[in-house]
Length: 188
Ligand code: ADP
Ligand code: 5GP
Image 1 (cartoon, rainbow, N blue to C red):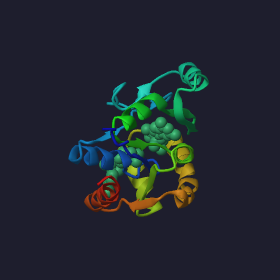
Image 2: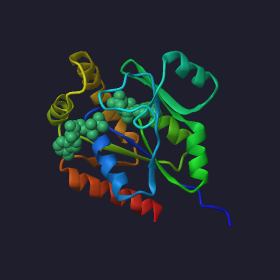
Image 3: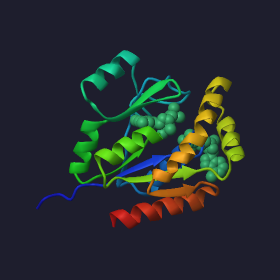
Image 4: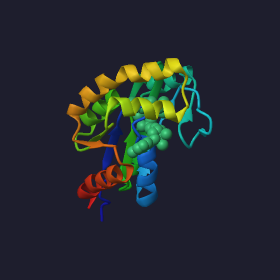
């Protein structure tokens, strides 16, 4: 019997909105979901591990992989490159795995064009003030990086109109339940 192809879920949202926090809990509760590990040229934050959080590579390596057609999508965000490996996604979808890509909006729209039955979910903050508060509270970026990330926020939120679903991350448990409900309605 042929294996049913897996579903691809794309999660986006502005820096600091809580994507990482939500996805960590989502996958803990639903071990059948797999998160793609992206390649990036940005430096690791304290505690981040190569091959776990990202594949941290140089700009030269990244551009070589772009040239070799290794990325399903890629984008520049706040001065760094980020990309999703095509081979990993194809291999796992063909195995019937349901996958999650946590990527920014340009990459998400590239995915929707290439894989029209992918499901795009945008995580919104309860307010711009709360978003800035969370981003600063995380204490992982310098002021210039924080300003760069805040600069992107309005454009990103505008782009959420192109997504299939939006979830407001105000209360974490409520947002997690909503996200799970959307995903389960599609894969079950
Ligand atoms: P992202 O991955 O979207 O950049 P993070 O998951 O790193 O964001 O979250 C940014 C900060 O906000 C973290 O310190 C996290 O603990 C906090 N946070 C996430 N969700 C909530 C929430 N619903 N309420 C309050 N704080 C939150
Ligand atoms: P961060 O530097 O905070 O880990 O990520 C910055 C932004 O890049 C986030 O919006 C995140 O979702 C996005 N991102 C992470 N990996 C990828 C990827 O492979 N492709 C694209 N297009 N964006 C990514």
